[in-house]
Amino acid sequence: MDKEIYEQRREDDSLKLFVVLSKASRTLLDLAETDMERYGLNPTEFATLELLYHRGPQPLQKIGDRILLTSGSITYVVNSLEKKGYLDRVRSEDDRRVTYAQITDKGQALLGDIFPEHWLEIQRIVSGLSGEEKQQAIKLLKKLGVHAEKLRDS
Image (cartoon, rainbow, N blue to C red; front, side):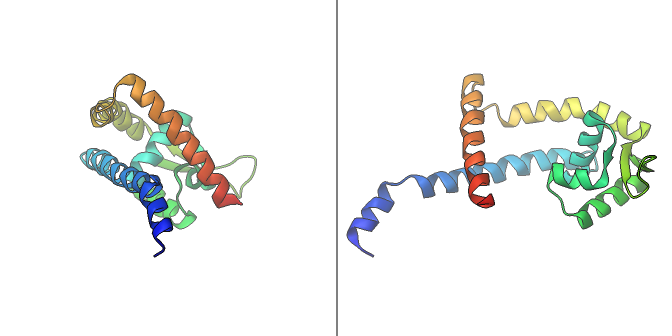
């Protein structure tokens, strides 16, 4: 490798940032997933219930967009949550081609019980940063994410 290119690469923090960000993200997600699993839910089930709990009934197609799942995965998750009694499928009255997922009373009770504890666990997980550092991280990571989305979409 050319010595000049090697020196430029060594002085550039891009790769180091990518590695540190990837490792931190994986560790944070692992801790959050471990917390979710204590309630008998996998991360996609938890994310689906959380979406329905906070946003109300959602078309099945929109759930995938919001929590980044393929339609096949959404079908699997909805089937699983339906079997557990946490959500129901409801046909749209306006368009029979559209089916909504709606959280049940049992699902509402579950999320109502576990979400406060999960929120405390998330607070514990990110407590390595001060409030001001969290705000800085949010701002910087949002900026990085927007840039990456532009690259992906171009």
